[in-house]
Length: 153
Image 1 (tube, rainbow, N blue to C red):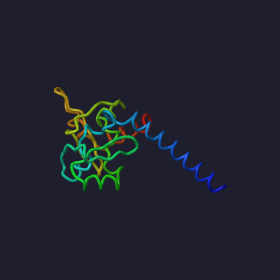
Image 2: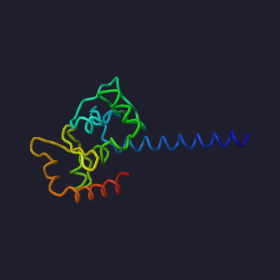
Image 3: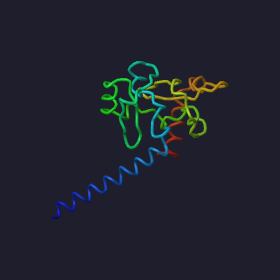
Image 4: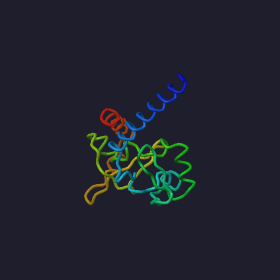
């Protein structure tokens, strides 16, 4: 009986942690209707070095957020190592996060991979935030990491 109570308690704690994690992810990740990266395949940025739209029929949901993939192989890679492929700063504009810590929507086709990490940027008709980012990447990444960790993690 004690073992059953312990197992049930452990399951309850796990459910609570999952629900809390899922709620935080939905609150802090750049997503629309719980779809990340506007439906772009997070693995394709690394394997094809370009932004590729995923398809709804090849998807995976991780802690309440759904990702679309362009192939079953990309989906498998993501499931094996989600943290490797998810964009930094919850998918918000890396430039805005490093400059003022704000969550700014991105253009998923405007990206850069630095030290095996995916950074997304906004791209409006008047400014491409990736161009300013390139001046001192290491310093802006440190500032962006600090802003993200202090405010959103």
